[in-house]
Image (cartoon, rainbow, N blue to C red; front, side):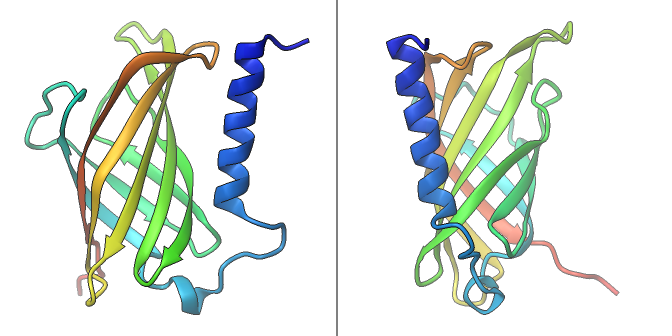
Length: 161
């Protein structure tokens, strides 16, 4: 039997996944999502609750047309993240990314969950996620008090001849 705390966490996770994925069999069509689909170079700026970040701190994010995404953060203690996205309006999307964090000795510390509302510019080559938020969960999936906000700015990576 799950403890009340674990039950609440399970309900939150299932609710978040259901909100992001939507009804089964209703994957977004490419025509509706091409504004976000692709690969992006993202700069990340911390805000309240975020530890100081170096100016080079950022991510590479690849977003597929079926609602999935993969993110690599420029932090050697955070693994490649996986997540989901959903279109919520004209050039507006919500994303959630889960990343695993380890200490320098390789011990698992917990999971970082980052969420943002992204607005893509008219040209489709830049986006802003302002603010993004993150929360840290311990090794057992329990929320900790470590959370914060910041901004994310993406530039689409394009083919260069």
